[in-house]
Image (cartoon, rainbow, N blue to C red):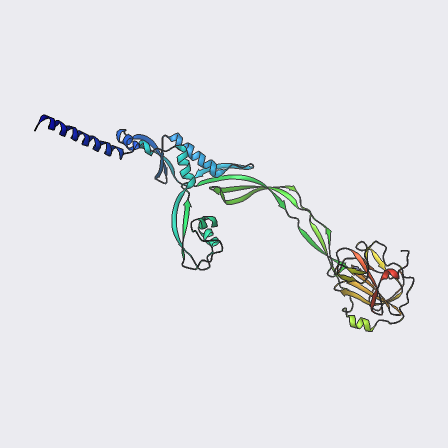
Length: 399
Ligand SMILES: [Zn+2]
């Protein structure tokens, strides 16, 4: 072989060799080269229940990660005093020798802790399960379940036996916090019911409105990762005492006949209906006149009064009804003869009974708000031969 040819082969071989070295070296990352070239370095492993989760440069860094995570889970709030916060798991720092690339920063390890351990599990739907129930059973939110099962909504009917995916997140670390908290709470007033035989049965008056009180309650609590798992009252301090509400219930039974419009009509006088000189049954402002009112016919006038205020018979006559009426409450009807009957409604207490003769101006009852009524007043009506007329036309002009 000629010298020249030998040289050619040598150059060719060198090119091939160089190319091969270049190709193999590009398949290796810089970090790998570093790892390959640099020796193992000491690091500190964050070990949870005996398993190393991550490696940090030193012990101080592990403490920083743990403190940051504790702060996240305890979230100090005003009025909350934390007495201790510890991990449920056994947490250790383990000295170890690792490749430099395996060492993580404080922020990296903190993020691993915050994200928790994700695991996908299959869940077989029980009979009568709903997304909400499944979430409850697995300590998840409905949103988390829907996120891992596209196409499902909270209303989707899930037949028993269907398999859905649950992406469960289990925290690596559980912070158990024990502390005390103070909260201001309402003390609801109590209601005391008394009977009053001066009030008609069915009548109920609030004698004293009552008022809520306020107290400062100190609780001891135990939290796990920010969720209260137990709470116990340890001190209570009353700031404002509540005031009892007092209700009076009427027990007086008005001994009278049942309201029977037919028999009343049959036993009522008929005549020319001539009346004059009627006095006002009650002195007070007229709050509602005779005639159409909100699409309903108002067969008399409403005179405002105070509960318990006496009202009078507008003329002499005979009581033909004194008792309960579903609309007019405790009601009196007086027949004045010649076809004239007067009506007195919503009374809290009736002072007359059926058959009783009354004189003009006689007190026959007390103003109330019984029956269909929104406040204490006297409903007063006049009927001539069983037909309602406008009372204003018959009452004397001076009250
Ligand atoms: Zn009325």
